[in-house]
Amino acid sequence: MIKILSDSTCDLSPELVQRYNIGIIPLYVRLGDEEYRDGVNISPEELYKWSDEHGETPKTAASSIEDISGFLDPAGSDEYIIFTISSTMSTNYNNVRLAAEDLEMEDRVHVIDSANLSTGIGLLVIYAAELAKAGKSAKEIVEEIEKTKDKVRASFVIDTLVYLHRGGRCSGMAALVGTALKLHPRIAVADGAMHPERKYRGSSKRYILEYVKDMEADLKNARTERVFITHSGCDKEVVDSVREYLSSLGIFDEILETRAGSVISSHCGPGTLGVLFILK
Image 1 (cartoon, rainbow, N blue to C red):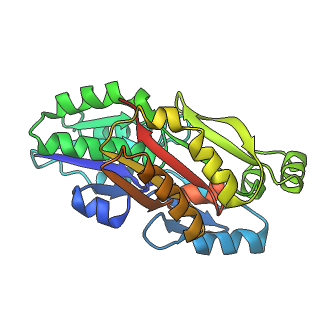
Image 2: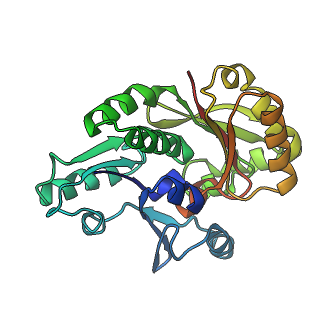
């Protein structure tokens, strides 16, 4: 049997995790001296409250080798395909590899560096689960996923620069000026890293729709199975407007909405929204 697992940064909803029978390995979020497990005992709203009260960004940490080992059965015969957040962003990829080595399971544990984050990973995880259900071997699944990774389009637009500043990813002056001018940067993931692409202005409903419409050419060249709207806490009206626009394109079989987990939310802050899909 092939088991599909991912670390918690894939940001798949509980419903999707259940539908595709995916195992989720939590990363850690640290609020001062307290440590929590992403998606288990901490919510984004709790970390936003803590961050605003303390003027700090929560720290995040990879799953421990011991944690990962608990998801693996060295005495069994199952094969495991495990997805991780980009190895340039976290040591989780290396920790999964080390856990497999410690258990002498390298031949049965296939670790995939997604070179992505959030539902950019989730798209690959679901695709792997579909391939497994279709009877593909672990080797065939890994080969197909490796060919697909570069086709994932993952980007998001940020509402506030405060969290990027607190996390050391934006200077204080840039955050101050950006906030004063109401600038909202678009960040895209490419080659396993995040890259700023452009800036938007205006109200959230206006700039988020502008961001999505800027992707129309790519959206029209996307695989039709699904597209994700993933956000870290946006007004329902804004999310609904994005959904209505994507629906009007008549491209996707499924338009899936998910909430970013605590690890992703701790870096981007509230009000961030991304539209993620795979190109043909």
